[in-house]
Length: 311
Image 1 (cartoon, one colour):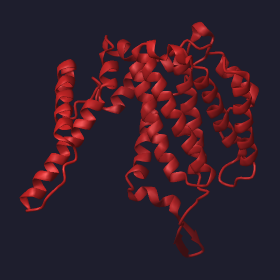
Image 2 (image 1 turned 90 degrees about the horizontal axis):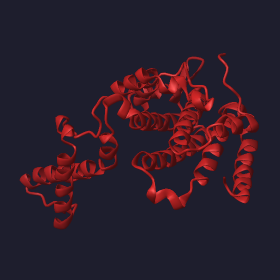
Image 3 (image 1 turned 90 degrees about the vertical axis):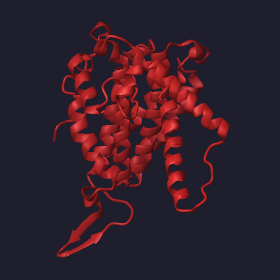
């Protein structure tokens, strides 16, 4: 497990955060505490990874290492934003966290869903598509500007352009199924809502890990989260009109735009979503990497995690 001194430092640091949240006005202290406990537990798990085995791990475990580290950073960002009352940006990050959760769960279960695990390799090499896309968009921009008599700087050297093109062609060759989508998506199920539905159909998350005495999340649905959270937070991510409700307040017959922080209910929503998603992330990560899954519920109980109740 984590070195004793490291563990003590983690507990002390997050313990100070728990004390600070008691004086915050943007959300109840117990909501902050739940998220802090998730971040603390996640950090302990990450610190416990045997770095000597990192290079020899399999593809799925390697993916899980990157995704959980990314998720931890997202969770910390949500926490810091809600601490100072910036609920809208926090919800945007919740959207990103949900997308990562759906993708990690899908990569874990893609063999059950589609019969093979080639999508894991395609996911790992998708950078070849995204970076080539930057090149092709820039070339199109350069062409339009040149037609107007303007001079445009090169974004990439000739050597880099050749490498980007070769990488893209290699990706298409290695993953021919991706050519059916315009953006050469790594997944065989391009629509995220379809991936969410496929995950629900497996019932893996809902059933949990009974062989390890870990109950699941019977009321959790990836599809429901996609509809209720991902689509809803799209308003905030894209700056649509519906996103501005928390930025408007009325007093009597006078309305005004809030510049800066807000104690809107979205603060509580973002904290709760981040804590829920991180809990599922940690179970998947622990399962994939051979951790003792009982560590998670035992740690949460020991730290005083409060199970949210329907109000």
